[in-house]
Image (cartoon, rainbow, N blue to C red; front, side):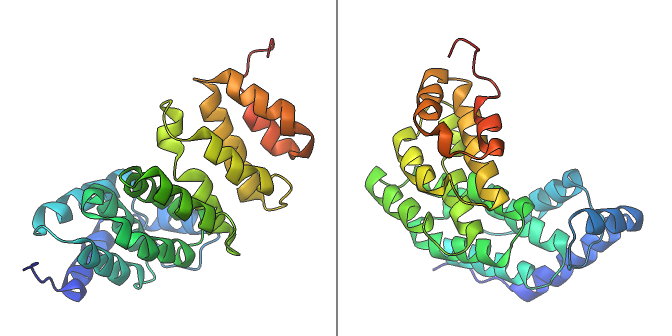
Length: 236
C-alpha cells in the first residue's frame, strides 16, 4: 500500500523554508523580468535545487499520483519558488512517473504558462516519461499535443524529445512532421522552439538539418531559420 503524505503540511513547511532563503531585492527584479503576477521570494536556482534535494530526501517512496498531488499543492500556492520546487521535485523523481501521469503533467503545463516552467517540464520530465514509452505511444501523445489550441502544449510537443535528439537519438523524422505545420505560426515561442531543436540536432547531424532547411526554409520565420542554421557549416 502506497504511503500517505500530508501535502498541505509539506507545502506550508516548504513555503516557510523558501521565504527564509529568499532575497527581497532579487524577488523584485525577477518578478519584473518575468512580468509575473505570482509572489516571488527571490530564491535562485541553486537554492531551489538544494531545497528540492532536501525535500526529496525527507519523502517516502511515492507513486505518480501522489507526486502529482504534491506538485499541484505547491503549484496552487501562487508562489513562483513553490512552483519551481514542484518541478524540481518531479524531475528528481521522474522515474516514478509513468504514461498514466502524462495528462496531469500536460495539465500542469497549461497552468504554468511561461518558458521557465514549461521548458523544464517538457524537456526534463515529460520527455523522460515519453522515453520509456513505446515509439508508437510516444508518437500518439506528441501528435495530439502538436495540434493543441494552447501554444505552450504545442511547444511541449516540440521540446519533449530534445534531450534525446541532441544526443543523436530520438525520432528526428517525427519531430519534422510535428514542426513543419507550425513553421508559419506567428507565436514567438513556437518559432523559437522549432529553431532551437534544429540548432541542437545540427551539432551532431548537420546534413539532416541542412536538408530540412533546404526543403522548408522558405516557410520559416527569420528567427527559426537563424536558429536552425547557427552551427551549420557554410558548405551545407
